[in-house]
Amino acid sequence: DLLRQVYVALNDWSELAQLMPLLIRYKIVPGDELNTLQEQLYRQLLAQAMQPPVGSSTRDDSPEKQEVRLKQVWQKLSKEWQQQATLILCYADYLEKLGNSRDLESLVRKALKKNWDNRLVERYGMIESSEHGRMLLHAEAWLKERPGNAELLLALGRLSLRNELWGKARDYFQSSL
Image 1: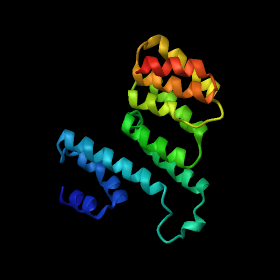
Image 2: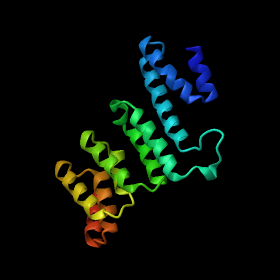
Image 3: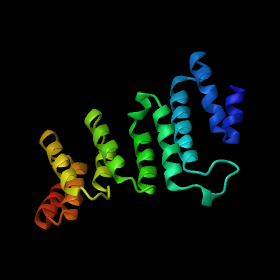
């Protein structure tokens, strides 16, 4: 536990990641605190993936390299953690920074299919993509299952605006309010 505290204080997230299985196995950290610690760890590992490796310059670090590192970190997470809305939103923000709207849209859509979360719906409506028409169709299908969901109606309004469906956008915005 002291080693955990040291790694957190030093922001040494890679070492903490190696220590995490022992913390879990021996139940050193209480359940709620462990979940908070794991979420913090995974958020920090995703953030580190966006930084150039130690010893290299920022100009040598291309967006492609950042994306490879980011996806490697994401794929190492357990399926349980890959379904947590807060981590999905964190990962989505980094994908957006890298300009990968295709993977971003797919990630959020699949996450919503498994576990509905209003924060993800709101994020879906803000995705800048060349496929707004397809996104609008997906979101309208969700509306059949969740009529009156304010976040979904807001997302539909935003998607309708991008598709230049002004009247439809106005109706969705009014319904959202």
